[in-house]
Structure formats: C-alpha cells, structure tokens
Amino acid sequence: MSELNRRQLLKMGALVAAMAPAMSGTANAGDAPAATMTPPDSPAAKGATHKLAHYIVNARYEDLPLNVRKEGVRTLFNWVGVAVGGSGHETIQCAIKALNPFSGPRQASLLGRREHFDIMNAAFINGVSSHIFDYDDTHLKTIIHPAGPVVSALIALSQHQAITGKDFLNALVLGVETECRIGNMVWPNHYDVGWHITGTAGVFGAAAAVGKVLGLSEQQMVWALGLAASQPVGLRESFGSMNKSFNPGRAASNGLFSALLAQQNFTSSDGMIEAKRGWANTISTKQDYSQITEGLGTHYESALNTYKPFACGIVIHPAIDAAIQLRNQYHLKPDQIASIQLKVNPLVIELTGKKTPQIGLEGKFSIYHSVAVAIVDGAAGEKQYSNSKVQNAQIIAVRDKVTAIIDDNMKPEQVDMTIVTTDGRTLHIFIEHAIGSVEKPMTDAQLEVKFIDLVEDILPSAQVQKLIKLCWNIEQLSSAALIPQTASL
Image (cartoon, rainbow, N blue to C red; front, side, top):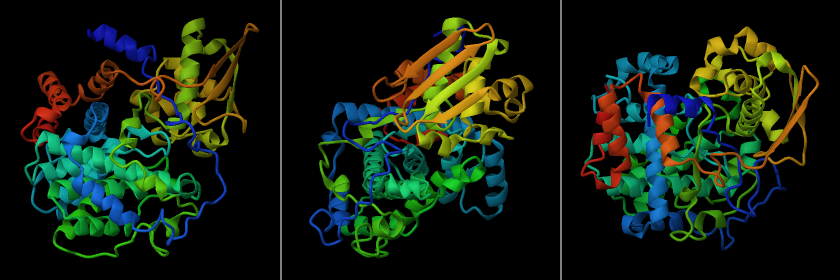
C-alpha cells in the first residue's frame, strides 16, 4: 500500500470500531441484570478452578481451530503495534525512571526502546505501554482488553526461556480464553461497582499463559490461578490517568509472579475462584460459573476478540463512526456545525462523560472531544488525543456544540446522531454496528495500516517490515523471542 493511500485510509476514518455484543443472547454492557449468585456448592461452581486448570494443562496447539489460531495471531500483531507505539509516552518515562534503579538482571526488552529490565518489570512496563493509548484489543462482551496482561507476560518470559512460536500462540489463546471466561462469569456487576476488569480478570490470563509454557502440572496450575485470584488490580476511578494503564501492566507481572511461584510448589487454596470467600464471591454480586467451564475446547471466547482503530474508550467509537460518516458524506466544515445531538446508552456517559478534558488522557474518555476531533480532523487516532488537541480552540468550539442524551433503549454499541447545520439542514445517522465490531471486523490490511502508523516513527522502516513478517508468521518461528528483540531499538 502506498504512503498516500495508507494516509488516506486513516484520514477517511476507514478504521472504525464499535461496541457490539459478541454473541446473541449475552448481556450487553449496560444491562445491569439482577444479582446472580451461584452457591459455592452447586454443580456449576464445584471444582471450577480445577476444571479450568485441567483444560489449560491439557490443551494442545493442534486442537485449536484455524479461526482461533488466526485470531490469536491478529491479537499478537495488534498488541505489538500498540506496545511499540506507546513506548515513548511520558507514562513509560515515569515508570522507567522509578523502576530502573531497582531492576534485577537485564533479561527482557522494552518494546520500542533500548532499555532492558528483569522479566517482572519488563512485563509490567510493556503492559503499560500497550494500553496507554487505549488503542488495544477488546473483548466486547466484557470490555476486557485481553492482550495486555497475557502477551506482556509471555513476551517477557520468551526472552528468558525458549518458547516456540506454536507454543507461544497456544499459551496466548489459552490465556485470553481464561481471562475472558472469568470475566464473563462476573460481568457486568463486577464492573458496575468500579473494578477495572482488564486488571482483575487479566491476571488469571497471564498466570494461565505463563503456567502453560512453564509446563505446570494440574495442581500447580490450580495454585497459579489461586495466587492470581489473590491479586485483583484496577479500579475504574483511574480512567483518564496514567493509573489506568498501570492495571494491565500490573496484571501481567502479577500473573507471571503467580505462575513462577506455583512452579516451585508455592501453594494456594484449591478453590480460590469459586469458594465462599474466594475471588468471585468476594468482588462481585454475580457469579455464573458455567461461563468458565461450559464449552471448554469447543467454544472460544478468544475468537471474539476485536481491535480498536480509534485511540479512546471503546463506547465512544460508534459516535466517532457516525461523525466521520456525516462529515465525509456532506463535506462538513467545523464552522458549518450549529449543533450535534447524540442519543446514547447510559454506560457511555458514565464512562466517557468528561465535558471539558484538560489533557490528552482525559480526552480519551470524553465523547464530546472525540466527536469534535472526528468532525474537525476526520480521524481519532493517537494524534487526536494529544494535550494540544484537547486545548485547541477550534476543537473546543465544536465540542461545546455536542449534546449527549441518555436513552435507555440504546445499546452501548449504538448511537443516534443528529447534526443541525448553520444553514438549517438536519443530518441524521444511526449506527447499529460500526466497522471493527464482531459483525464488521477489521481486515488484516487495516490492522497493518494501524500498525505502521504506530511504529514507523519509532523503528527503522526495514525493522518495521521485518517485525510485521515475524508477527504474522509466529506459528513458524523456532523462537518467539525474535519478536521482542526486533521490536526494540
């Protein structure tokens, strides 16, 4: 793809994602059903931790369906792009400055950088880097960002212990499967009270993935999951600050920590997920243990992963899609806008209702800023969430014309937008499912456009092309360590 065409693709907003229910019949993000408590001694709950551990330990790469392998590769590819892309952010500078004096052996690369850290701190920093742009993958049923905890831990370990590409991919899929199934078990009640589910469920994914490549026994895997259960991390109050990206980073290092301890027979309770005073009953008013165990090895939540083409909170994406479509269709200029009215699900305002963001990180959680940059720039990539963009007078002028109305009939993945122009026209669009959702997935070519835009100013062009090839061909690699080595300066 030529440079011009690639830039046009970004400019025209072809990379658009949206919230969407990944499967029919599942709860939507804002449904808030009545609390569902499964007694710890019920058949669905009994032995849930052991059943999950048994599956993880015995699952083989050869058993993965082709579509699941493919989505695992896409998950890796997207994660590498956002991790390298976020490597120069001030958040990473702060983390390096704080941790460098105390780091152990220089075992693992920081993607997009020259520094090396011990694997525990490398997993943490790479996890932070992959999430700081809010541009990563999303399991739409739970709003978990699966790759951050899982791949960050695996990438660090791959530079300390030899892991083939196939084993790496198998562990990645199993880690994502673990965290998403556990997330399904407590969604949405667990999230509604304030937990950042990427951190709280992600730690299980990291522990499962690392435990798989370490070759843990079933009992050791039970302990690894139990130790992970003891380390829930992340509160939604952190959204809009550096602390938000801390959560998947810490989940990665905590999961790695758990698996390494379990490998040395550091014990835990055998029912830490489902026990009366275990993880699920302690931090959620809903527990549906069937979500963990039913369909293991036949139904894959990891196949439902999606990828953000817009660098902001996922629930804003339908509104960005709508704004860009109307902008392009009617050739709208900012000074032609009299008002923009949105009808949205309550969750959208709860998560992204910041009307006057002051910094770029806050802009990522402002539907008002996001619609404004979509109108002004026709895009909502990382450049649209800089501090200067948030403070831009033209964008603020459009932002002030945006009104968001809560409509309980709207699903989180939907938006109803009406723009009134200064010459009296009324323009309307309704978004059911935007490009990037499960229903309208991003193509590999679109993922490459996003990847290159993120990394081309950080890595030399020849290195970028080599990295792209390595990621797409992970299953053929004799050593997964080739990816972090190539992704670093």
